Image 1 (cartoon, rainbow, N blue to C red):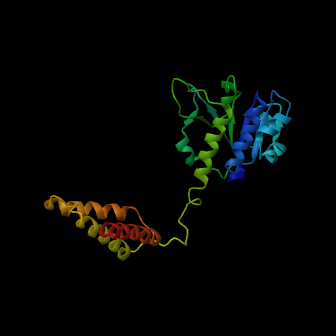
Image 2 (image 1 turned 180 degrees about the vertical axis):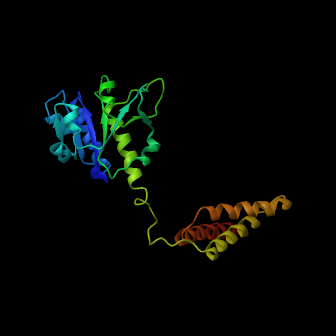
Image 3 (image 1 turned 45 degrees about the horizontal axis):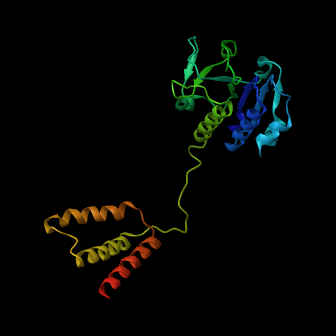
Length: 238
């Protein structure tokens, strides 16, 4: 579905922002960049320099002189804006993007740095997206807006794919391992009269066990801690 999503820069004014936007797209596995009537010569050395490792996106970027031509293969257009538009158009939040059918051709359009999108460009949209920000300072840099939307989409499209898990080489400690560790710790604490007053000992033991079990220790970690407690006990005996 990543290939169904395009990012449209409408009349961008700064080469650095165009390059940074391309870099942002590649960070989150998107490749379709569209530029409408750019102010700087496109492409140029500054755009390539700021795109860093995303020069391929610049090379494949499609450039159009007007918005209508750039939208000819788009099913849904989502306009981004820092201002609420009092128009009869659907407003959508970042956390509501999941209701968009990304099996269709979807494009997100971003306005020029100085003014953002006009109501004329907004009129082509199916949805208007406002990125939540400080109400007293809503204006976002163009590339920052792109990277926020790209990251949100990446997370949404990979929600069932990018689950991090522990290495298979890491074996979780068994109840037996943890009980042995806790008992060793308790023995050391008892030898220095830590549980005082005695009537509080049951509660203190509960809290102590809870600490060790919540840590989800591995077998290796329990061995290390057991060695630490044993060494402390030996040093005290000496």
